[in-house]
Length: 196
Image (cartoon, rainbow, N blue to C red; front, side):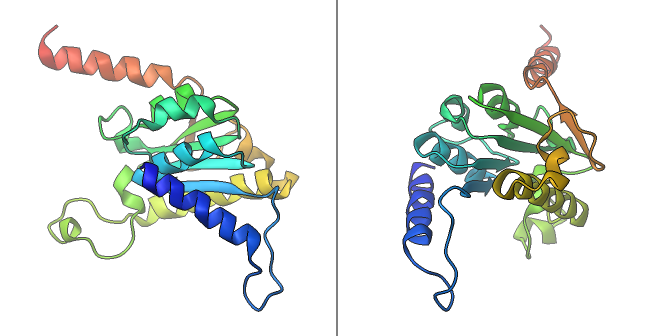
């Protein structure tokens, strides 16, 4: 994850220092964000802990080493953390821990009727076997939540202010105001399984 976070830093430096396209496109230094999915979501948090940006989106974060939840305490940029409804409290999701540790404003949203693996596109070996695979609903809701969040945070477009509000009702998602409650629920489920 550290290597990927370093690559994200390098990419931002290149985008800031080089004119893009035919030379007419430049990147505004105050409108930078880190965005990642799965393992890359953890890397985006690790990168944001070492460099100030305007926003960070951690989409369906998977556990990383070093832990993104530890680095999240150093992130002061506004954050969006998404988790699939089918993955809430799962040991393969780090969303609750990342959101609970965040150093600045953060919103944790559950994407309804979705799975953390549903965002990946293209043909996957396990999808051919009926395990996992892309989910159009997950992709659509994730793109909408991410786009609205970035338009508000990076462009200051007040039309999309609800996408930065951790209590706003946005169709297809549920705002969780207490990420720590997920960890307690998971702990209770594990204890039930162990007969404690």
